[in-house]
Length: 427
Image (cartoon, rainbow, N blue to C red; front, side, top):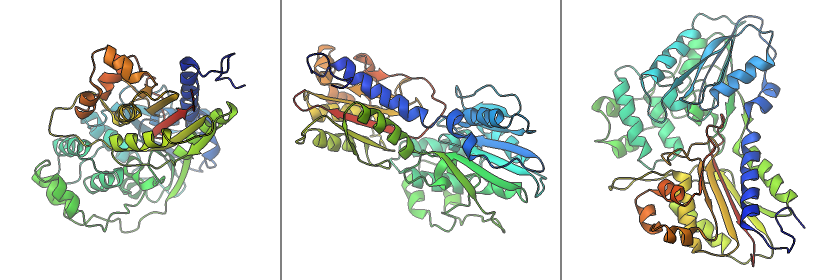
């Protein structure tokens, strides 16, 4: 008998929810910089060590570097979204806006770029990057203004484009991304420690790769520019049509992934297996429209199963906003609501979908949501229309109204989406 069974051998709502939450917590813990960063550090340099970085884990990573290198002289600056800073003593932690950059995003980027000037081959630049870095580290390319960059970010958020296309655009319009920070640090050695929030763990896409040569430098971005035409400034549109500037001598990339979605999902799977659950791993790189994936996953949950089964997946889905005014929601709450509608109150099925950084888009402070067999029944009792909430991209409001909006606060890491669907046949 597992922890998930009561004395009568019946699965209970409370214990199913407990399992899902313990799995999510295990996934987050597996990506905690305080636990995983030190093992990836190189030997201290002969010369200076300048620490730079950006993203939701930047403050936590900087703190972990200080803890691991207590006797190493450190300097530099990292930038994290508001609410994601952590106390440090030698590395400055700044805060800026996410997902649309603000003046602090530009100021932090200029400070970071200045901090790597005039270094020698004996010096080390330690770059700490994680998801969310593209917004908080925002330095417009020549000919652009911060207002131009803000307009582009807003357009991208509602575009439905995949993260790779978004980052190709961001790099082309940036004076610091796409390896430009590493080029400024030459001839110093540059080592990048990264927490991946990208399907496929493409380091060039994490925070748009400030220390990694732009893989899309030779790419024709005209099709992407056309998609955004009329939504971005003429200057930004024109720059997307220009070939990218490539450093004369691109530096070799030394990138070390300290945490990945796969590692976090494996930690969660272990919690399920210890509870006697069969785990079906669907991948750590699923993409596509959130609502479409929710309906697809419901089909798996409704299929024939011989025993308690967990469908586990990660990746980064998208939400394409329609013409109507959107409510409060994010890709994980939208996935969860679509799943609940497709399940139609099926007994014995619970699910948790959340962003491992603790913030699911515009969900209203939620990381994601929990789905239970009685989700639609409770919604009906509260006077909610699930289909209308889904159509209006108001999934965060929906789950908050029935008490199932998952609120964790900032987790100080980010390995992207976490989706777990627990199916108990006959439950």
